Image (cartoon, rainbow, N blue to C red; front, side, top):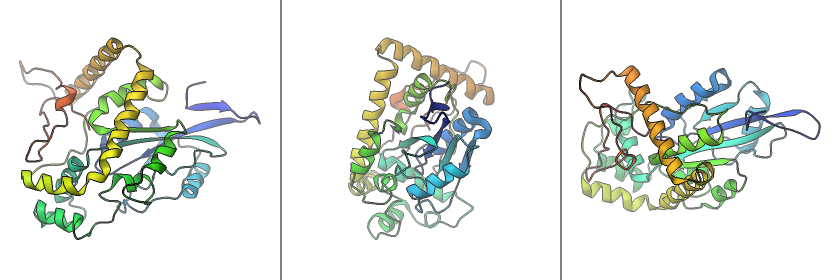
Length: 307
């Protein structure tokens, strides 16, 4: 019996199943993760998408989804929060969620919407500062749109971490920073090898930057998005704890991380063959998600980076 794909038998002798729910915070690496989940779960994976990102399911809604769809072992959805039925009568429920530096996420979302042709978005006709003022000062956006805390706690408040911290006590919530995607993927592979046998990746759905963001505009949004900072710190702490359990020896962790990035590199070059004599290095983790004073991400052209 594997770690989580088939959970331990209940007292009635009926084997319980495990269900992994990807709580998909918009613009936090979810598109890349969805591809990995599909590869690892195959036909037992379901990707549910919605343009109404802030209309979230209740715990009862999710419980009914799990009961009615036993064919799925993993589901991704923007409509999940961390308020999930961890005490479900028929399944062991696990939550997987990535969060992101709030400033980087806001900048990425602006440029994503500028090129989102399916829907006419305000970002397509507003400058970055106009867009930021409309959402962060005038309150045009739904409160959950720019608050990852509010998104994850089911809309309770933009600064209330307590419900999120309470879910972590179940031992079934995996909350990670997207800036350290490689380490998170490696830890999941090590701790749950039959569930996640291969999380090597090629980055997906990267927002196209067709302009620069001034340093004073970065300062403008950072001042208004500070409430999410404790959430990112919490995600870093959770990842450190999992890495410590997965790799008690630092040297072993470093070697495993180098091997993981080599797998990502080879996967990337399977689809993007390098030019002759072109180096195949993958940039160091610290450089993969850097944002300069203009708000521009540093993204190499010939190697994979964190989602």
